[in-house]
Image (cartoon, rainbow, N blue to C red; front, side, top):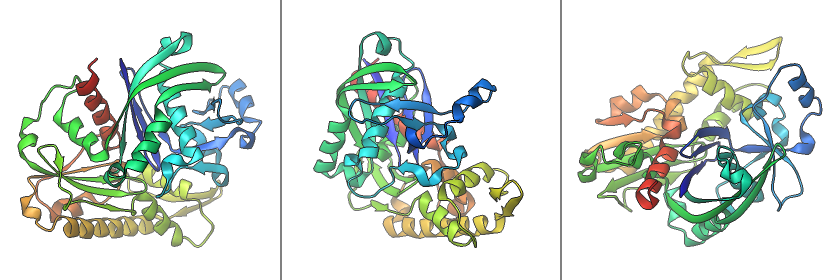
Length: 347
């Protein structure tokens, strides 16, 4: 049975199957708000990474894709970033269905018949310990999904839903190879701290013998969105958090950050961004110290999540020993979910 792995983050959605990986924003746009002239761009050879999605349980067509933010229709985007009852939110249900449908586009069987799959999804540890939240999410994911994408219908039946604590994703990604074989056996005997810095939350957990230490764990609602809001508050004008996120991600390697109000009005905010990143990193370190009261008992500290690429990594390394920043941190969890699925259902 094919495995679909879903990491439906607050800011970014990461997806994986045996055939493809996807990273998209966790925002969607009502088709009625999409510029009518957008289709004409295709005739001019200008292509946007935006597709149209529709499900039977919603009357509207929705746009989703990497280039949504480039349309600069930020006030019209439907966001799924929320801290309570996220899985029962209508926008989240749409996003989950679109994600399953998008993964199905790589399989001919989903076009000709009903494709049967197993889904592995990760949730914050706090949500994992909430049976009502798990039940709600499982209801959204399990069963038959019909998704129309750019006029093509894809049918998927989710036979099995496996919901795992989010930190398990990165742990399994490091522990296993791409075929699900054990490659880091020493981690099984270690006390491992996992820091997952996401868009809406920072998750701090401790694993020993694949079991969570309930005392050495914490969830903070201070993910990347908190950083973007801090940057926005220091700019003396009306700015978009979506555009702030875009410029931070685009400029992090070169350490050059500019906010574009228009073609002729571009503001250099490099100093502001660097100061706020340092402040954000300092708060993270403080939270880590508070959670890991006996830091010397941690054998390996693994830092993951898309925002781990944005923080001041040197500050963290100078503070803690044996820190490992995961390569391809944004995809580490979803790859681990997929590997976990391999151990449960096989190929």
